[in-house]
Amino acid sequence: MENLHQRRITIEDMDFARELFGKFDENIKLIKKHFKIDVIARQEEIVLVGEEKNLALGEKLITELANIKNKEGALTKQKVTYTINMILEGNGDKIKDLMGDALIITAKGKPIKPKTLGQKNYLEAIEKSDLTFGVGPAGTGKTYLAVAMAVKAFRNEEVNKIILTRPAVEAGESLGFLPGDLKDKVDPYLRPLYDGLFDILGAEKFQKYMERGLIEVAPLAYMRGRTLDNSFIILDEAQNTTKEQMKMFLTRLGFGSKAVVTGDITQIDLPGGKYSGLKHAVSVLSDIKEIGITYLTDKDVVRHHLVQKIIQAYDVAENKKENKTKR
Image 1 (cartoon, rainbow, N blue to C red):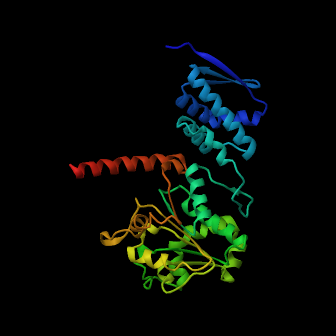
Image 2 (image 1 turned 30 degrees about the vertical axis):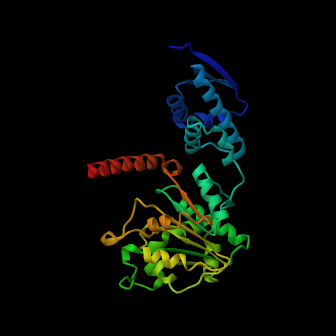
Image 3 (image 1 turned 90 degrees about the horizontal axis):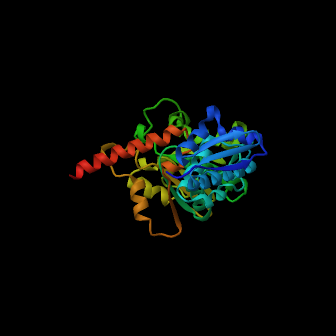
């Protein structure tokens, strides 16, 4: 066994030291586990103890976390965990790419920016392409970031209208037997889209834009026969479209418009074993360079840390099932 060495890092910001350790030392426990080093706080310095190769990684981590704290004002467990993984994967030099300016500021003053490299690639694809597919599991920010980009384009007067839609699979897309007017019928299926707009715009501005027809939220069935010009259109939960519905939606795109299609191909709820329009579209359209296709993974999950572990567990179970089927 190699001799243990020490590295001393001077800490001038005691708030950083407290956030580095985290609640009940949760962050330090992660660092010790992944880097195989001890981390000791001594007045205005942090002492790392371990093998030399691991100390270099630990010092790199603390330097990067200090930069994040300095530029973004706070360290969260998600940021600490993601930075650890980036360094362990040899991507430490890319961490700075996530420290740019905010994409947009919400009504409550919260900056929205990518939290993972996958999210950054997704936003760049939306910026560059008139049609972008964002495919990935729950919690990766597919819909929320698309809504943020729509609001940004609207504020910059790049589009005149925001249109949000999704298939109401549970209602069979007929919606006729549900009580109330159109809004009452479709609201339960469109609620996640409303939530994103509420958070970013604020309730008052959202309501004003809705009343003026500048924001439209409607089920996918109501897109048929229309040409959508000068609009930012988001099709959410696209894994639940049929091939025919997807083709219908994609051919609605008009001049001066931008569309983002989001979905999770592991959560298809189509009845009767119908083939997903999202799976079909990304296969058929993959060779068209003007179309952006971004695949997000469990590494891009920014919800509770358990969500990432749940997705990984389901993936393992699904792979086992597929392997048994092939035998």
